[in-house]
Length: 517
Image (cartoon, rainbow, N blue to C red; front, side, top):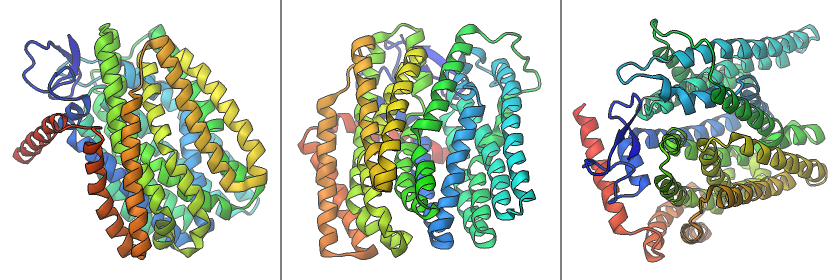
């Protein structure tokens, strides 16, 4: 028996292989990735659109606000993430992992979520008051510009924070399509809001524009808080431990492991250097964001397999997930690195030429970051959050010390190399742990094949740019590299037609059903 989500996406149900005529996670005829895409085409599309829209908005900010304005907005987005993780006490992660236990098949209302949210409101409010107090202090010191930026950051932070717990509830109940539709709506609003805000209000307007990206999902939280839902009087011990460990791990990661180089570059250099570095960080971050969308099912689905003691299905799903994620992410990361020298000056402007090499490094190592996210989620699904916390503490310490040594002397280029090396280190640490403790193996040969195919793809794109440069050259390079990548995959036997056929059949079926609706 293996767990799957029901067709309405209201929660996990059990379906045996004997009576499973459809292509689910336990189907022998198709891979896990094929099943995931067939059952959540909209979700994958939303991930691609979110990545694309984030890139477009970064171009808008760079073109309208210049290097310094880009640095200010980058700081606000970084602080948004840090403030959310520090103040959420692991409640979004606990919601994602455990909400399915608390919900009936006919109603999406959750008493557990009601209880967690009552605490979430308090902790996020304290954080907002703290930021507001600092903004008022700046205003009293006649720093109206700085004060307005921090007040805008409060709005951004609250919008993002509530969207995280809302999307955790949706994905924890298997409602990937609904969460993806909220993302699509937010992306459309984000484009117009960032453009209009940047033109009218400068960095403050751009920050407020980014708020609309998360607002639809945040407002959708009401769906899971029905009037009849009662609060859980006492949160179960395993939920508390899981939330606490995730909170500590996430807070340490946010403060010392993720984007701390922005603060260090700003401290030792100038806000302009932050603007340069943020371009590469944004581009690599979009790849990580795409991976998050693709992997939306991992924690609840893997968690259900673990709860049912289906270790064989867990191991198989783990390998297939990593394999297919590598196939999807590798050409974007390596291909992006190969065209960055032409792409960044062409779309962001010649003023951002110093951002090229840090971006190349960050993009090339984005594969390791994406793969590490799969392993981390598998560890959490196995209820090994304490072990994951210990590894994150060690990793964050090593990363922070390396950045403190490197950034003052080598600036953004040194920060990029440290960040890339840190991604490889994290991947190795998590992989060794999975192999020795959880008996989970990475499909190393498959990853080598997909990476080699992506390298051939990137080399093709780079060669085309030596013939034709500019935006036209970029279009030609991407158009030539894409079929080369697919051909290389088949020649290297990274994928086979037998695997791809159920995927395409599933996509066609899903698109027909979407049109019918």
